[in-house]
Image 1: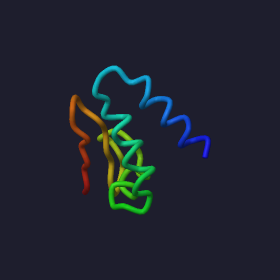
Image 2: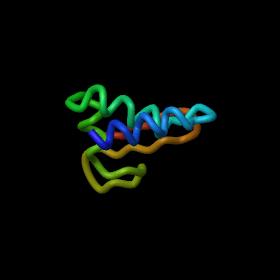
Image 3: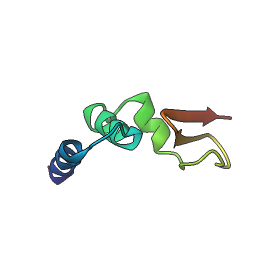
Image 4: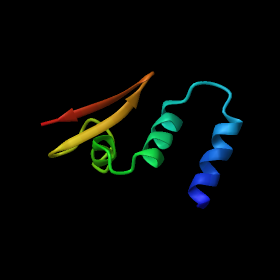
Length: 65
């Protein structure tokens, strides 16, 4: 529950669009989604195998190889 309360506090204090916050909200709402499975992989587009992901500008980028 504290994660949800922390997230609510971050949402309340947000002053501009924030993709990191968007992703956290999505993961709390849909913890078994395909995106949740992807972000379990290493962040950054330099992983050694499988999936990698990153947030660049206003987009979440996923890479699979």
